[in-house]
Image 1 (spheres, rainbow, N blue to C red):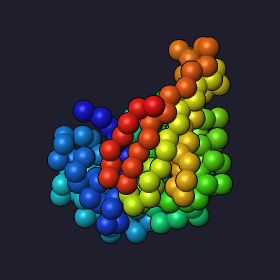
Image 2 (image 1 turned 90 degrees about the vertical axis):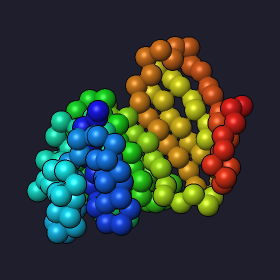
Image 3 (image 1 turned 180 degrees about the vertical axis):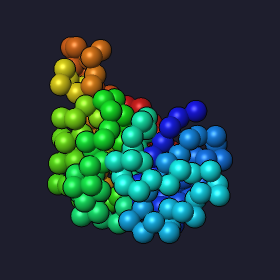
Length: 175
């Protein structure tokens, strides 16, 4: 099983952490309000005193925070991004807007971290396109909500592309 850090343990983040624990994963949690994180201790979560401590040694980091400011303060000012090892998967689940998402994706790519932005909103249809280059892989959705993913893609020379169309009914078709 994976070692996962969940940053932000409110209603959604807490539920995510509990489900991961039930599935047998090792989960470290952090929240600005420590009492919220402590509610997960009886379920087996390790409560960290800082984002960096929660992330230390994690294979996957999930951010479920309030807004773009909270993501910046946790991942940049709070040392979260700097604490990630190369190749860690960062699942960013906060709706922060297109500009902030692009900036976070670039910072993650520069750090060698795989970044996936997944808005918690499921009511917006979107089209996701993959494009690979020697520098990395970026996934971007068109429409009202957008999605990015970056990772090193050493097998993608020459560049390749792949598209997946998603509907609000959660179905996907490859194009």
